[in-house]
Image (tube, rainbow, N blue to C red; front, side, top):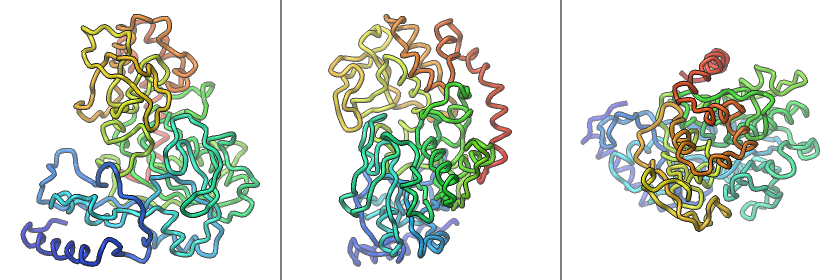
Length: 444
């Protein structure tokens, strides 16, 4: 809806003054009543790439599945519920105000922006029995790959069952007292980001135990493109379960439909799923995350660069872990200074207890001003390999293969393929996947 600026400004200022006068505990709905910490990154928003922040147009905001409580609360009443969630499983308090807050240049940190899904459901007397936590844990503080232990949530007293420890899949015992499972996690659209692997195993466990799964869908910030090598099934792992390209261009809800439809759960299993779709969203919608989805993806730039820089995880190259520029820079102590003039020193920090090249000066590239990518940039790893003074030790072959989903990429890099030649070998797999993907889309 488009408003005349002055007329709307008065209405907005009146409403905002009313919120402030009611204090920070003001409730806009009986469905979001419990306060949690304020977001640390940036305001959830929907802004087209070409639109300036001071535009006079008010855009229809994206409404996540979790925010549409009127659609799913009836499904949870009088049920024993389990939540698969983490720090991103939230209900935004003011989704309709997001574009207005930007336009009026109001600091979003002055408002309590969201409540955690668990807190909100408990406030509605929903009988939550336990929470299943993915990689990085329920509060999102564990390092990448770090095992997460079972524990009890201090705030709610709920049992937290880890799905990134000795078990990646909920056991029948852990589901024995559950009537319905709710899955609500913000994904970033890369195959080696393990939340879709957790989705697979949760769906499989629900199917085996005849328990329905409710998916509260969220936008994919990398949903505007599809690219990368397709995983070869012999290289499947928790870092990549299914034969899909590295960047799949699907939301969690769409992906769940595909897992079911393609029979990827095995043994002719089908999970009974109900999806609450996102409102006002297409795959071309620019979506800015209000909460970092994991410790080493601190902002929109890192999320956009992650599919390209994630290849470095299987090499000796540091991709910003141990700095505050995670997945926005890369470097190594053995790069020639005349080719890589950006320098930094990784140190242990939040999300990286043992970063590569800890305490060593790394020379590399600063990509923080890179324009938003709509394809994978393979040139960065090609240049890194070609300039490395330790080519024999450049790859950790096992790790690189599970990230790439194929042994071919390492071989192509070592054999001197160009970026164009490498990408040409992805074409057949991408076209095949696009035809499969089209059957399961919920959004344009």
